[in-house]
Length: 257
Image: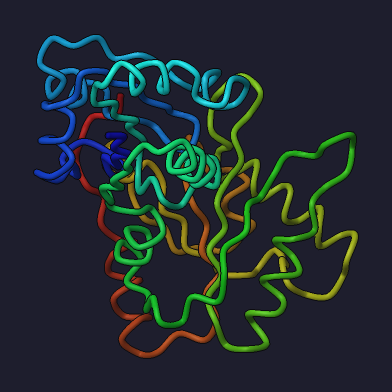
């Protein structure tokens, strides 16, 4: 049996079902590309079993070590941050395992998408779509964030922007994302990512981070590091506006890793 388990966005978010699957596993793998993983909780739940990073195994070898464990008749667990069903690489692994005759169980975790909307006090019913702000590839910027936000604003829908991972493995900080969005505005000039565009930023959720509600220009001087998401709100309802402003005024305590 292959279990694909989500631990949520940070410490304290793991479910009982996730911890039980890890405790009962014979082989424990994890990946930390899609988000920072609570390794302390993972190692404690693994009860002495070694935990092995599976990023290269997944990206280059189609899960070779995972399938070696399964072929030996043992239980394998792949642990991810957030919710594992929201990463396409894990969908591919599920399809491959089932094609080879291995049963698969996905154990959901708290998704950053739902968690960020909760932290920002925004209605998930108004989520118009998700895009990723990426660093330029070959000097070319992806215009998907601009196009999606433009479409959603016309439809009075909110836009969730995930942030890229740098080549050194660190997550894009909000200030880098702001620079990229403003660069896109310079090129497109359709008034989507202007300096005075209000955005909600949820950063280091579960790791002592916070929620901000501010103008895009203010992110250029923000010292906060990633991981983070940026939400481009459409028209806010009175309840959303009041709740978001209160949430953004709080600064939760907690020590970041």
